[in-house]
Length: 128
Image (cartoon, rainbow, N blue to C red):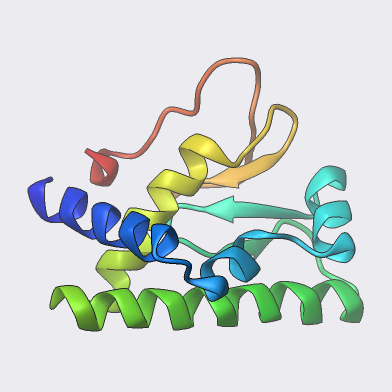
């Protein structure tokens, strides 16, 4: 848990230092925002967006672009924190699930896709 907190803090410091890439990877374009709202795309505990239903080529391209940006950010943080990309991605995934998934949107914590209700998401054990 301490390692995960250090990784999350490092990610927060990168944002505070003006990491423009972080902002880009977090801001959905219209295609991704629409797919999230319709339930075709959701957040995953691994730190990446996933496909709930078979995507159109436009949705696939847009989600792939967001995930590529996220991986670049995770890779940068991992190198600076002597962590693996998977550790950073999972730490950020927990943060995304807790903060970014709005009621009515889809998410996956390890099993099948779920729809968030009014209550907070029951985070997986890896989130501490």
